[in-house]
Image (cartoon, rainbow, N blue to C red; front, side, top):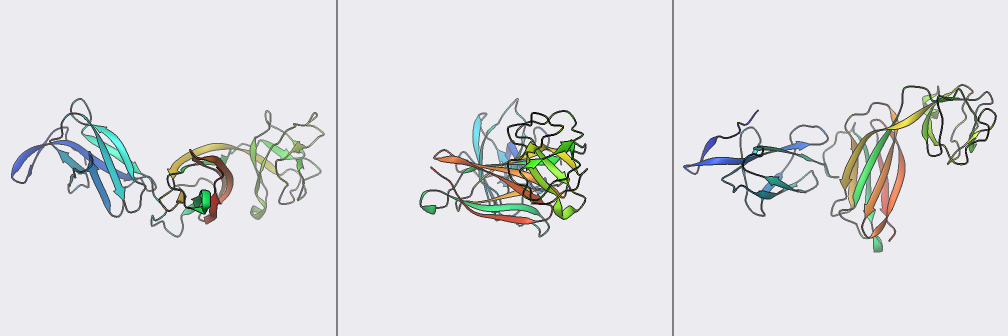
Length: 279
């Protein structure tokens, strides 16, 4: 529904002018926010919710106001919202689900709890999850000798362009259970035609000659934070491939940044358990 730029409503038998209409959206579904929601402006003023689901504030002075949203299934948000001409009447705010959100059993999720000194839950730690998906084009193939479980070097042929230290790739084995991810490490081979590329970690499986490798690229980024209990959830609304990597970074002003690559499978929920940050 489109709300007109200016209109009048009758409230407590008094004609009043609409100053702001707030629409709350769910970042996971892109639909209307779920559960119990509290919206206030400038600390204590509450809106009226109209039949279309908008939170409507009336007769606000033309100024920038602090809008606070607290919700059952979402992280709290406080944003600055201007009212009065020439600003838009409608303000859309996207809410980030917290770890109490009612995801379906088929959702693709990563969960965990962050703690600090004394193993106490760490609230408001910043969290970023970068989804890395394989490109459709083939970056290289495994050489004639193949690759063996435990190898820390990978012989490659038919390389498209160049490979650099830090490049991450999917080894797309014909057996789906042996698909894995690897990271190219320094030093690079002096002669790529005969020398293997060093890997950051040993291979988990055997792979036949000719197995294709696909470069991983950034697909999406989720920014979130921990709750008062230190909990977090990383969610993937739409997955474009059955397997991908999510690089998780957790930061706090009083602690060192924590980083971990998580191998994600579509439709699965993973728990990273308790992650203790180091001062």
